[in-house]
Every structure is written in C-alpha cells, then in structure tokens.
Image (cartoon, rainbow, N blue to C red):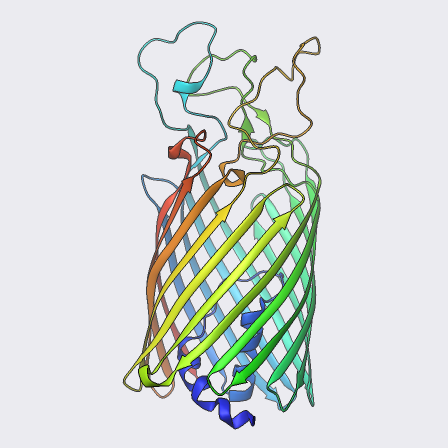
Length: 413
C-alpha cells in the first residue's frame, strides 16, 4: 500500500486531531505519536491557543487553563514545537476525613451532624512549559523534549526522548520512548509535611502504529512506569478511631502514609476506522492499568469524528473508567498512632484519598472543529465528567462531578 492511499484518512483526521492539550514531560501516548507523524507529513506550521474551564459541582474545585502552542518546520529534517500552560486553581477539596456523622466522639456533639465529607479551600496557580524538536533522517525520527512546571508548593523538571522508525513504505511506525521527571514537593503551613520532599518518575514506552488499509489505523503500546520518593498527597489526612476528636467540622487527622515506591504497567490499544459512505471515522480504544498499590483499572473510549461539508467536524465522545481500590485505602482506621501503648496495631500504609477507592467515572460530550478560513481553525467543546464510588463505604459526597468547556483556535502559516 502506498502512503498516498492514506490521504483520505489524513484529510478527515487533521481537523479532528487534539488541539494543544496539556502535556508534561511524560511520554506521548501511541495514538498521539501517530497523529504527530501525520502532521509532519502535512508540513503545515501552526500556532494554537486554547482555553479550558473545568468546574466541579457544589463549589468544589475549579481550574481555568490557558494553553499556547506553536509548531514550526525549520528544515525538512527539523521541526520545533513549544507549549506554555497557565492554570488558575481554586475551590474546595476533600481533606480525607469521612462525614462528621460517621466520626466517633467521646461525647455526643450538640445538634445534627453533616453527612458530607469535610473540605478545605485551596487556591493556586501553575505555570508550565515544554520544548521539543523532531530530528528526521530518512525513516528515523528522534524527538527530545524538556519541560518545566511550577506551583507555589510543587516544582517539576522533566525530560523525554522518543524514537520512531517508519517501515513498510511508511505504513508502519515503531516507537520507543523514555521520560524522567524530577519533582520537589515544598512544605507549607497547609500541608502535612515539615520539610521539602522529592519525587522521581521514570516511564518507558514501546509501541507500534500500523496502517491496515487506506481507511484503518491500528495502534498498540505498552508503558512501564516507576515512581519513587515522596508519593503522599500532602493535603489529605487520615482519621483514626481512637484519637480524641473535638469539633466535628475540624477533625484531627494524621498524614497519610503511602509506599515510597510505585510501579505501573499500562498496555493500550486503539483502532481508527474511516467510514467513507458516512464521511466520518470511529476511534475506539482500550487501556488496562495495574500497579504495585494493588489498583487494577480499565478504560474504554469511543469517539466519532463526523465531517459536515468541507470545513466542519463534529466529534461526540464517551469514556468509561473503572478501578479497584488500593490495598491500603480506607475511609478511617482503628487505633491511635500517637499512643505508643495502644493495643491496636497501626497499618504500615494507609490513605483515605477517595481517588484510591474502588470507583468508576464517566466522561461524555462533544467537540466541534471548524476550518473557517484556509489558515484558521476554531474549536469548541463541552464534556461532562462524573465519578461514583463502588465500595459501598466511601461517602458519595467525596466524589466529584464536573463540567468542562473548551474553546480554541489554530492559525496555520
């Protein structure tokens, strides 16, 4: 099969490709690597801007993200890509304690107790940036990447290197990648840490993209990740049953304790099928996740890219995610860590972070991309994100539901 046979698929995908989404120094997933190859083949330079508003219901966390991106081919063998991200973060987030109505007290507190998990207000801002260059020599493509991210309590430096090899008249691409992040968690009065902590993350990827025909792309990849250092959430605590409690609205918590080493294993597969009679394409994906915390997770994704006329693409999407709980997760624990004479054994590791519980999430919505001029593309999207617990123990009030609105533009030059 000749590379030219894929032109009809590329034409439909280009307007539907992801627009300057937030990325750190982590490896580009295999599907994105394929789209990157298509963009290189197109040889069109562009600059992007994207605004995203993530807002959880009932005054929970809100994140407003602005992203600026550019891609420029300086030579046939050299392409530069840069990105800057600004996040404004504010809202209420669970602190790790169960609802006051489920907390034990030495004396019954007066009045009714709330059935919702207690929360704390957080406010922060984040600046991040990355730069990468793709160096091509025949069928070989080497992409080094450097990134930086800064918040008032978190600083991250990252680097990544991806190698892609075109085979079979460019109908096959093999991908190898490695990424490393070196992070610093900074102590402050609102956290459970007294001194700055460090964290290191390494990820290795191997994958392949295969053009099965003029209308079908198959992607497969496997990622191995390893985290070490301070892996706790410094803002979330744990309630112990035997430690004296006072004000129900301000529970006394202990810092959570997670293992300082975590390994993850992530196989991924997707298929992209262009349906010529409908002038649309179906993207279906499956991702399995397992780690040394005892979490097993499944993610199913479906997106339909429908072309309307010559300039408009509408993309409804649906994603389902389900995970088991971490081995050391619980809503509260027996004993009192401050009492050395306690007859109740305190576990080595413990966390009440609801994100480590047995749960499921649903994401659904649609994105619209319009090529209003030959050099200008506009995007708009709306998604709904919903979490739900499956363990029958964690309070439903711990889980978030959010609306996500995105607006973006791309200028081609």
